[in-house]
Length: 335
Ligand SMILES: O=C(O)C(=O)C[C@H](CCCc1ccccc1)C(=O)O
Ligand SMILES: [Zn+2]
Image 1: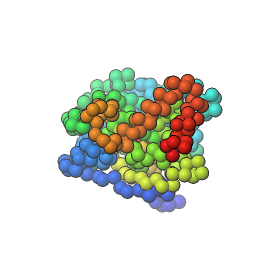
Image 2: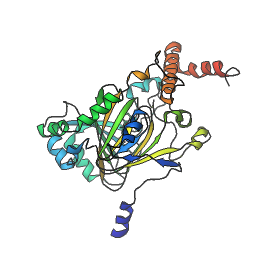
Image 3: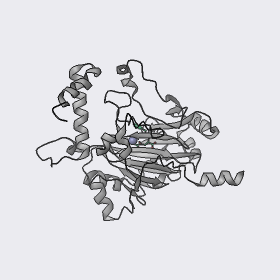
Image 4: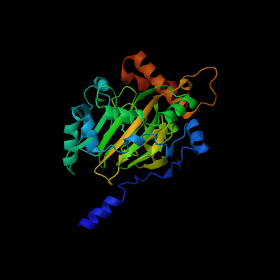
């Protein structure tokens, strides 16, 4: 029994979902191609940035010592999926929205206790807490953060015209958890600290194949397609989706460009995984101006479509009128 258990643990739990993928390049940060890809808003895995070198020693014991009684946000799910939702947008859903996860605040040491005793069948846990003065009480941890490779991160931020760093989200996930496909409106330097995570990315122009929820929906920015059981009747174009895949291990940093879709899963090699992201606001080139280059990029068209939807919700005041009005514009005139 032990051997088969061990063998099972060694092989990544990466289900294929039947989606064809190409590998995201893994390069040294010294490779000029790395900077070229980032400048062109293409994903790339950097293997030796040492961005969070001082966090390589962060394990559950060390974090418990240094975060012990800090309150942290923990999501609970009965399934392996942790589909993010904006609780402030549930009111527009006239109560047919059922939250897929529970969000609770608990002391970090309480979280570690539950994480350690977690076993298959228990509710899955996902701690997601921004690192900021609210929870950073220990000088040791502050010192670790101060010794991140900020020089490299700031150089990327500057030479690629990103906006300000807004968040460093600390994520600690039980093995096998999945964050379903979604996009964020920030650039992301995603650092893997402990355990392995698999990313499947899709470019912004795959908007039509991933069928995002409406902008006013609690699941705004998330794909409606359930990758485990895709509904090809409702979402026929999902059939043609092609992904860009990366397997991240400790020390790897994935540059995840603004508006790129991503599905993330924690693999089974370890009981839990630890990651830290660096979210940077979009730079000025998200707004159209007389210096905008044409034809527009996928991410710019995505921003336009979202703005049109938001403007219509605002103007019509009734989300159920948006579809009919858009169809009136389209039918027999633009299709
Ligand atoms: O770093 C990213 O962008 C990720 O998606 C990482 C992802 C967890 C993020 C959860 C989340 C999704 C949407 C809004 C706020 C928080 C993971 O690693 O499981
Ligand atoms: Zn994300």
